[in-house]
Each structure stands twice: as structure tokens, then as C-alpha cells.
View 1: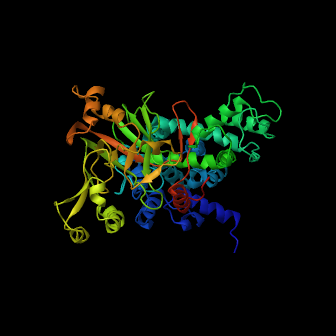
View 2: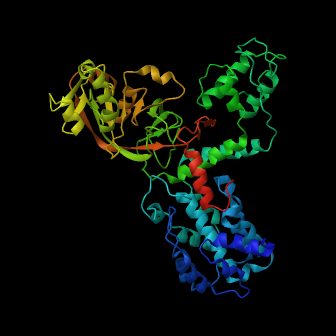
View 3: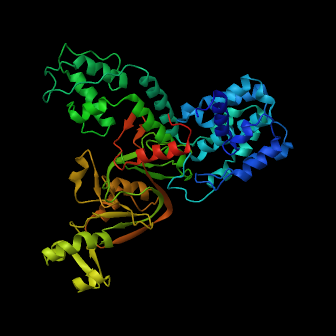
Length: 538
């Protein structure tokens, strides 16, 4: 049977209250606030998301002796706050806003069920802003510890008492500059999504400045619209691919992780034709992922964004910063190589860099030994000697290696896969940062080429960032340590957090949005997880 308009509104009101039984809203006789709060706690199941909301309503209402919290004026203010959810990449429908507004217009602000539903909606909104809507890899225990520092119950109570609900929202947002930048880009792309966005044709042949290109005017308009050319840039001659167009294409390519050769080939045209609505979704997913990040403190921070193949080293990490150009106006930035898609993906986690090793040994992981090294030894018995490798203990046989009684390591030197320095952040996955003798790989636009560890483009610069607070380390002493020689272990006086992050959309310090391919398919999985949790996505 098709639900009536009245029953549909009741279901949406249930979504706003989240934990309240739908029958509570369908009943014509309203229950008292105390009863509703108790029933909500009893009817709730073990949470699967990032927070445990059981008991929130009782904690909110008990100090006020279960008196109603909202009047028509404060309820209208709360609903206005919920209507701003799209600015955060959230959907007001997830909080039953439409149904609550109908209740308010119908004079329902004095009912217990409306009062409890609005309180529940606001509590969920604040919690979603603080820790995200679905559980992340960074937080495996419930409740999320960050909700001890930011208690949505206490924040809502204080904001309501002071008439400053918006202040409670601002306090819930991640204290990251990148979060503010992505919010701004999201608003920009929402505006773009409302405008016509016709597809650009693919050039019939490779073009260069001065070549004929019938779609030159359309390409110019697109680059201006996206901000890759200034609005006052001189338009191209009719049907001509101009030097200005090439510069705009290069800027666009750089923002989208493409080879910035200024040639509008298939990959570039495909990216130019991605609808702004898709970019809106990517930016909204980045806001969700930024809400996942743990508080790492105000000191130095290293962030690796896997789809962007980029590393940022920031002197001021958390409260003043962000994940891609943070509190530092000019953070150290470099290209990286990460784990291969589908085979050896680099996992997401927050590690603590504790020491460096100059001229390190490479201890070959068991999985690589079994899948790669042993088959190569079978084809060429001299494989270990040819690649500066040795067994531990010395002289172990292939049978010992297969049985796990021995292992293989690669000696320091020009053939060593780790290069001249290893940046260690002990973790169960044995993931770390390191240099590489194969510098040519950083010229590729797609750089998911490793077994899971992260190769860095400028190891000397990163070592100087990491060791910069120690007087005996400077550019000269680091260069000396990077030269061939014995292995040297250097402990850091204080660990430096390293965040392995995943975002297909970010914003640079210049305010320009950057987009990358969803190489690990994590965007699609997150959209599915959010859709199963939410009433509606986007």
C-alpha cells in the first residue's frame, strides 16, 4: 500500500529522532518527554557507526527535569541551523528537517514528540559534524574518544541556553584550514552545478598553439568557468588553439593529476567533461573524511594523500592547519609513489614517525619473498648475489627460505630498494616512507607502483624537516649521511604524526580545487556506506 502523506511525514520525523519508535509518532496521543527518552534508549540497538547515542536524550532532559527544551522561536532557529547542512556536505533530510518544519508550522512545537525529535536531530547533526557519519579506519573503538572533548549533549544544552546554536556547530567542525577551504570549494561547485555544462568534443588530432581547433571558444569558456583562466584573459582567435588556451589547459591538468603538457587529449577532455555535480560529491566526501581525522596536536605533521600522490610536511599540524597546505603558508610538498591499486593498496592509518635509518637494509617481507623472490631464484640461482641480497642467517638454503627458517635482506647501496634513507613509523602493516633509486617514476602521472610503502621524491628535504629541530642536523650533515656508508639509526626526540589520508578532492593554498581519480575505489564504497546509514545522499 502506498503510504499517505501523513504517514510519510511521520516516518521522516522518526528519522529526525533516529532512535524513537515510529509508532510513537503515529499515535495521536503524545507521550511525555521522559517516556520518549526512556523508550528511545530501550529501543536502540548496538551502534554500528562512530558514536553511541544511547542515553543522550535522557542526559539532555534529566537536568531540566524533562521540561520541554524548545519554543517556536528557538525551534525555528534550530531548523535554520539544520537547513545549513549542505554547506557541510550533509543533507537536511537526514535529520528529518522537512517533517519538523511541517510540525512547527502546524503548531506542534508544544508537543513532547516534536521536542524530543528536534533535540535528537540536533544532537545527531553535531555528532556527525564532529566525528563523521560512518566509522572510519582511524577510530575502531566506540564511542569515539573525541566526543569526550566535544560532548554534543553539553554543547547543545549550552548553545540553547545562550541562544548561540551556531556556535555549537562551529565548535563541532574539524579545526582544520583544509576543512574551511573545501567548504568554500563545495559552495563554488554547487553553483557551477546549476549552470549549463555541455560536453566538449575530443580534438581529432594532437594540437598545439596555433593549430586549428573548432571548439576553441567552448574550451576557453570552460577554462574561465572553472578558474583555470582569468575572466579577463584574451579569447582565442576563431577556431584557433592559442597560447593562452594551452596555459589554461596546463593549469587544469595540474589540478587534476594529469600530465601538464598543455595538450587537450582524451584524458584531459574527459576530466573537463566531468559534471560539477560529481565534483560536488567528491568534495562532500572529503569533508566527511576530514571529520574522521584524529586530533594530532599543534606540532609538526606529515600528511600523505594517496589518490593525489602527494606528501605535505607541516610545521603546525592540527588546530591551525589542514591536510593539503595547512597552517604553514608554504608547507613542504612533494610527489610520492604509493601502493598498487587492487593488489597492494597502502592502508589508511595514523602513525608516529620515531626514527630514521640512513643507508638502511631492506628486509624483504614474507609476501614478496614468496611471490617474487623465490620464483626469481628458481629461474636464476644467482639472483640474490646479482641484486646485493643475502640470507639471514648467512648461507641459508632455498628450503630454509620456503620453510620460514631464514629470511632475505638487501644490503645498503645503489641497488637497495629503499634508497638512502628510511623514515620509520612502526605499525603492524610494516608501512613506512623511504627514498628510492628509481627517481624517474615521479615523472609519471599515475604512481601507484609500490608494494604498499611510500616512496618520497625529495628524501633530503624531508629528512631536514624531520631532523630540523636538532642542532647537529642541517642540509650538509644530512647530505653526508645520505652518502654510501654504514647503516645509521637516528631517533627523533619527539615522534611526528604521519596521517595516511584518502581524498579525491582537496584545495590548495591558492584556493584552487584539486581532483584525483578514485584509484582504490574508496569513494564508491563510502557513498554506499553513507547511503545505507542516511535517509538520502546529496
